[in-house]
Image (tube, rainbow, N blue to C red; front, side):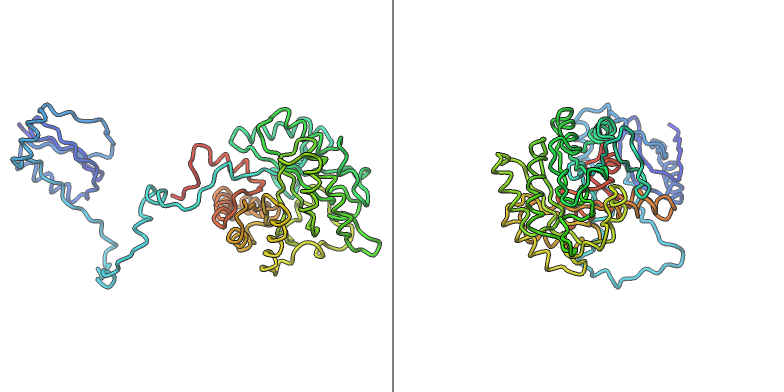
Length: 432
């Protein structure tokens, strides 16, 4: 029986000896080795070798019985083994023996996508993401210039549509931020605890339409303050702590009454977590959680957010109540206070520039840790993508994975829906 041989620079995949087929699997082979196989096949007319780039994964069924196959194996009648092929380096590369004594080579665990996935220490899923949503009294969705892809959503329609789309890709947690009309703002922020205000109405609508979602709320006076600060401002410009906390308690109770699952004091007033916990419990809202903005820094990364809500301070800055970006150990003081006062979740804001603080809280608290990837972080990645300076999608996913790696259990991010869309059908973020 004459031999026929077809080959390319692809993979040798099937050897047939006589009438028997033996599937030997995939193994790379060079053109020179293929020539060698041709010569060997001519010397053994009963052997047919097929080399092809096409992958034929169909099983080859032998006509021999199991006993006959075993007898052939005992007799040593095997097809000739494929030659070992070891790829060579560029011409002129010297083979060195200097490193042959290395007992550990970490690259061995990175050599294939399967191995890298097997040993991946951190994973990201839609369950780790919370989507911040801006809402307003209008019917139309208004784009936010400094935050491409984000809108002030009409609370009746746009809000429901955005939540629907996010749920479709697995995001089920949302935090609401209201744009309050100037006519409703005051120095004491009384609109913040209006039971028929914008946020309570939106909560009731969401929980009626999507009862399974988790609704977080923001507890602070700045969206409702005519001064643009998180607290009540004294005539000499000092932010009044205890008087502000009194207002925040009423705001948190109003939000809980509307159906909020988690209230989130972001004001950074001293003692507000304990006071809010007591106020909620007194009204029977024992199951409403508190996510405290434990380490909220006086950051320059908040600029686009303040445009979205038109909530810039009318004077001064927020450095007397938000933390100094230079401080690290101070976050432990805030952590200990919030834990003692009854916080259920501790949050760090911003996220990426403060990964060391995220890790600090993770290592010093058993409570869940949240991190807020703020508007400035979001807008920088968006701008870099538009200018083709970075790959937006890859940087987005890497940044979220790094926040998770630092120790965050949940991430508040304007990328939440976009990232969840990337994650659909995946078990987690994988680099290949």
